[in-house]
Amino acid sequence: MLDGSYNPEEIEKKWHVKWEEMDIYRFDRNSNKPVFSIDTPPPTVSGKMHLGHAFSYSQMDFMARYMRMRGFNVFYPFGTDDNGLPTERLVEKLNNVNATEMPREEFVKLCLSTLE
Image (cartoon, rainbow, N blue to C red; front, side, top):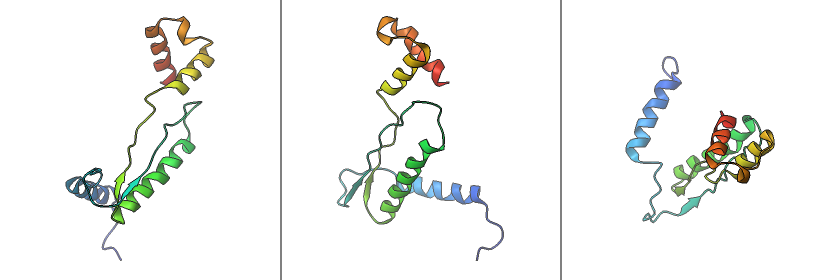
């Protein structure tokens, strides 16, 4: 049993500091440990974000942490879409425009305002 009350913020801070000290999230390409790699495709921005967008990332984060605890050298590059094509198509559809028929700066502003 735990003594006293459980303070999740205190526990999270404690372990976050410990994991940072251990450099636990860093992938070491020179390690002799077996590699476990997770390829995460970018989220598709085809509408408003919802809980389903986070669901698959939560599962993969769980798997990465589990495999680290099992002694694997985990390669888990997490990021977002650097291509932006789904976003561009959504902006064109919502605004009835064609990206190739307008100034680039204007289209970029339209994309940014749509995502806000």
